[in-house]
Amino acid sequence: MKKLLPILALSLLFISGCSIEDRIERREDRLTGTWIVEKAFFNRDGALFRDNITNEFRGDRVTFFPDYSLEYVAGNGEVFQGVWFIDAFRDREDDLEFTIDADFFDFRGDLAFRWVGEITLLTENNFNVNIAERTGILRIRWDKL
View 1 (tube, rainbow, N blue to C red):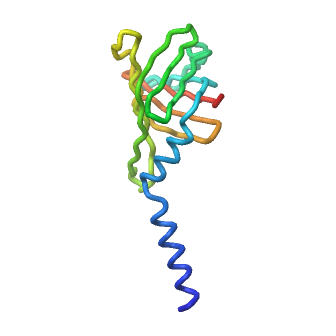
View 2 (cartoon, rainbow, N blue to C red; view 1 turned 30 degrees about the vertical axis):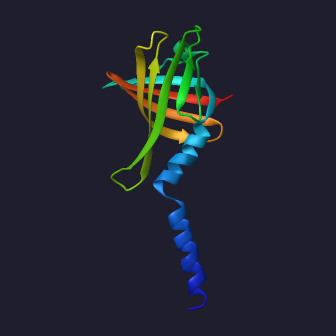
View 3 (tube, rainbow, N blue to C red; view 1 turned 135 degrees about the vertical axis):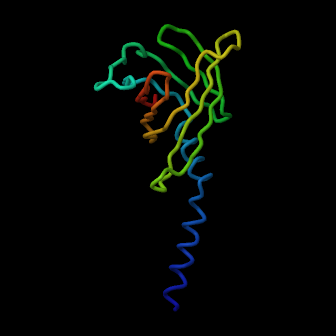
């Protein structure tokens, strides 16, 4: 019984320390900073192969700020300001999936584009996201600057 008590206490600490909110916060902390496009692909609905569209995003940078604002600087110098947030949900296999929603506004304050995407990888140096588009999925791999 004496051996079981510390194991139960550690288990309880581990379970309570890994809430969904804590896991979201850790991802938000990792996302904060400036990222540059490494690769970009587009999977058109019904297509057998994906299109490599990295050149269309060459030089694009996005900076996520801790106050949930962002700045996107396109390779052509165009600048967009916006807001972002990360959310999580459980899938059919009871795994936790993380999503990102971001709105990007032009210099007039009009909505220029929006991300509704799934975060497939987020480390200190790599950020992969699949963004739902009308005709397929945009897959972007980012490197941290």
